[in-house]
Length: 161
Image 1: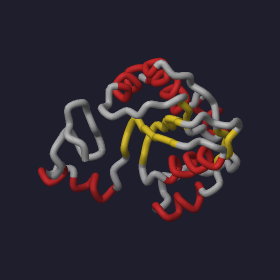
Image 2: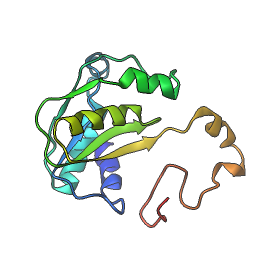
Image 3: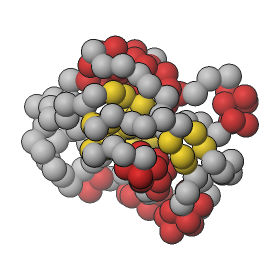
């Protein structure tokens, strides 16, 4: 699955030039439950596609609980300071995560990379979670008010949004 998603992510128009690819690390407990880190699997597959090295650059400093039931503000508070760099990152980093909901996790991870010396941090996620209220409206034709494939999903050939 990671290879297929990485292939789709690699052909997105406007993919920035980067020096290395890294991932948002999964909490140790969650990794033990699942047996793998899905963001790492995506990052390694995407790095191969982009011919860039996959490099572990972050560690979790806080073992956060699942974010699913939290509000956006609660997610941002919970993720503040949740990551630290394990090495000095290169100038341009591509940060990979599996699902983007509010952006709190990606923002906290990017802040740690920037604090450690990265000049640019670009982020990509395999999926975008819609807020529940928008998901409920998805049953009718108003669910796709934007031009293109689907809200939050960009495919090659879609106009930029």
